[in-house]
Length: 216
Length: 216
Image 1 (cartoon, rainbow over the protein chains, first blue to last red):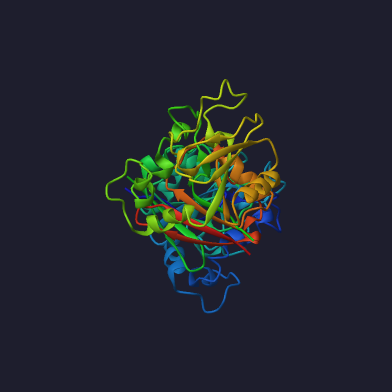
Image 2 (image 1 turned 90 degrees about the vertical axis):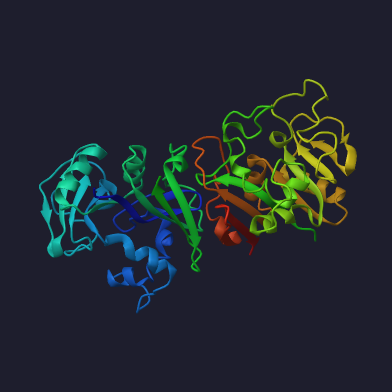
C-alpha cells in the first residue's frame, strides 16, 4: 500500500505553521521566510530555484529536505497553499505560486470549496481541484499516483485535518527557533498524537529541530 | 548583578506547561507526570525524593537538571505552583506540595492576590506572600537573596509574565515529546522572543529537547 507522507513542513517554536496576513507577496504572512530559512540553502531547494547559496548545502538539513519527492506519485494541498485568497475564483488566471513549471512533476489534488477544471502545467504537474473530505482527496490522489506514495503538502489546516483523520503514515516537521506569536497553529486539537506516532528528533547546525513522526 | 534564571521548566510539543484540571492529587492536571518523566530518574530529582531509579542517572538530562539550585538565593513562584486552588486561603494549613522540608532551602516569594504571613519551613525555606507585579517580586527576591541569583520557578503564567516583562536572563525549557492538547500555553504573546535571546538546543537520549535561552 502506498504511504501518506509529510515533508519539510515548518512550524515556529510556538507552534505556528504560517503567520498572520497571507498575501500574494507574502505567502507566509508576517512570518516572511523565517520558517524555511534552514531549507533555502540546501541543494534540494537551490535546485528548485530558491535563492540560496550556490552550490546548495549537503549536510543534515539537506538529508531531510531531499526526501520530499522520492517515491511520491501525487500531492494533496489545501487551497491556502495554492492561492493567496479564499472564496470563489475571480477567473482561472491564478496558476499557483510556482510559475509555468511547478516543482511537483506529479498530479496535485487541491482541496477547495470552489472546484474548477484541471490545470495542466509544464513538467508533469497537473492540478486537480476537489471539494471533499481528506479521505476523498486521498482516494483521488491514490488513483492518480500509480501506486506511489502520497505527499500531504500543506498548508497548516490540511496537515492538521489529515492528522485528525489519522491518514498520515510518516511526517517530517521542522521547528524553527523563532516565535511568531500569531498565525495558524499546527498542533491544535491533537492531544495524544504521541500514542499514534513514534517521534524522533535531531538538531541541525542551522538551529532547526527536525522531528520525524512514524506511525506506530 | 544577580541573574534571573529558569530551570527545568517543562512544556509539551504543543506548548502546554500544565494540563487541564489541576487538583491536589494532580498538580499538572491531565498531564500527569508526562512533562517531567525525563527528570525524575536523574540524580538531582532522586536526591529530592522523587521516585526515580536509584541511584539517579548522571547523563545529559542530569547535566541540565542539576543546575537548578546552584548559585540561587531566592525563588519566585506563582500561586498556582504553591497551591492547587486560586482564591482566598480557607486557612493557613496549606504549606505547599513539598512536605515539612521543601527542596528550595532559600526564601521563596509566592505571588498571590491574597497575602498571608510568611511561612518558615524546615531546611531554610521561607515562603513570603506578595501581591504585586513581577518587578516588585524581583525587588523583594533580590533583597532576600543575598546577592545570589533568582530562580523563576513557575507555573506557566509566572514564567510567561516575567518573559513579557523582559526580566529573565537565562532559561532552560525542556520540551517533552507529548501532545497535551489542552491546558496552559507557555508561549502565548511572545512574538519575537528570539530577538531577545540566543537559543541553543540539544536532544537527550530520553527524547526530550532541552532549549537554552541566553539573553543577547
